[in-house]
Image (cartoon, rainbow, N blue to C red; front, side, top):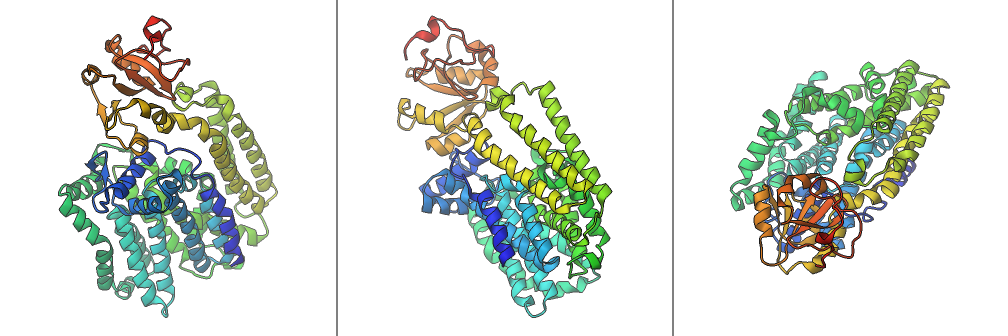
Length: 558
């Protein structure tokens, strides 16, 4: 229990600090928060809508969580992000409980700490997305299955809870809620030559539980929105798996380099950890109590990677449900390194750390020599702001090299965890406030609101900024062609158009009809009347992609 409290004390600040301290970012945070807000304001808890249209990309569970938080805390950034943070924290705790039974107390603590300090896990636990809900319920289902597998006394109760977790996973992300634990458990039972254990899983009753939890909403939404079933199940799931559905199509090896970035900083020890697990580890230097632990973890991670790699549509966030299994591998490795009292796998750890340092140095040199051309224009960031990160990485490289050379696994583990915490802290406190105006419409819309007529919608060129839906409560529309923009600006009253500065050149033919009147971040505000807004004297990107010239045509008052 003391170790669990220590783990919680580590995780709570990582997941909860500063959740409400910055605005919601485009695209996903604005989209899902706006959808959840409409649930509360409309009272329709069945059909999720996005900008007045049915939202068919995701099931509703995480939207329900966010909507409930809105009911309790108001329409705030804290309320929008709190469900993800709590689910991320709870998954760390579930990983600890599973690791304690699977690998022993020390490995459980290290596994929880590794998961909590994984970059993508920390980011997704502080972001309004659906993936963290699926990851929690898949992890819970795997933990409950293991509890049922190893305990005859608690098998019935754990199996009922296992099926309930699967039902909520289906409500969180659709068929994946069944596919992921099903593939992992099937492969595990085959590896243990116990396919007959399926009879003890009470699948008939389990199917009824899953249906009772997930089916009522799927049936209700399909009756209210007849296009939901085909849109979600056929286009999003089957179409996304077979052809990508026209988006996120990646090669089969995508998750190799994807894991390298998403599972940072622990990805650099993953090859050694996977080898250690596959080898089974020597009992004399391990706290492992279960000989089937290696097969369980390899089945969980292996089947998931094969499945996601076979799908046409790929995003690194899709494999988030595998991260607890990967963290358990890392925790197992370091627990044995701690217990061995000598340098095991020194060559592998040295190679992994050297690769980490090489990647960091190569990235730093590439950014310094060839600075991203849109780093400041798109995100407001100057290279000097990132310099402290380079210093931090050098300190991490030196400390890690010392730990490997002196065979001090505790120091190595602490250096990787400190790296993750330090990068997250610097991003949250220093980088994010600079980027806010470039990734959120909150500040700009607060200024524009007095200029807009009641009920007036917002017009965007090419793509809507999703955060506008949350912060304005106005309908938004995207004008795809310059002709549509010209028609919009031909209105008798004063109207506005929001456009990314990178797209200004596409409206060059409208110079003299459209006037850039304000700029905040990467968003340029255009109007059918000249005159700068809000007394703004800073640069505005013009139609040629350069700052708008000074002159009488922008001097006129609104």
